[in-house]
Image (cartoon, rainbow, N blue to C red; front, side, top):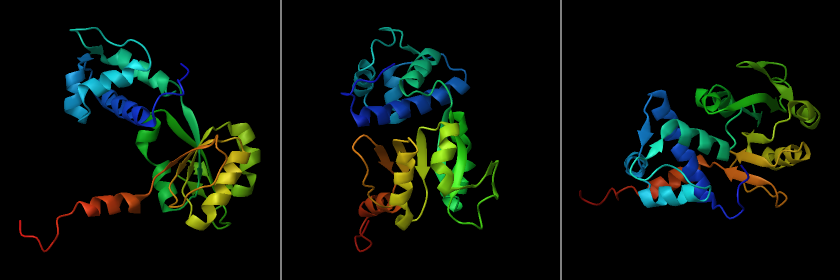
Length: 213
């Protein structure tokens, strides 16, 4: 199902949240769910939930709710999760190792098919069920792998070069764990994950230690 260019990114983020909730309910063999149930489970307003779905057509039946299997499948098709999506990982350090071993990726139809690094002490070694590959072969190897998604888990100084190699390999959808702003062509979509930034935001909300409770 093609996505309208008018679909806001926050809507897609919420769809991913709905998909996760529905995956859990499906595993519990639940049958139906209402928009009020979604609000209770996610904290996302029921009206917002219905508006998010409205970008993609009609869902559910008034007074009956949503069949979980059907809603899960439709959101999966919207997010292109109805089939396994191959993912390339660049960076075979501690974070990269944790990502390769993260079981939820495969559960949600993402599969890291190759791990690359520039450290000759790592190249050729095993990372879980993968053999670490030489980053200089990324373009050539992806011609066979056919991945369209990639994860960058390298130090700041290497991230820009890695991103450019990924784009050269035909990958224009990147999840970036390096705390740096990547400068790439406008048609490349980058999602940044910055743990320190997120912790800084949480830190702001901490009560002042000098304030009495």
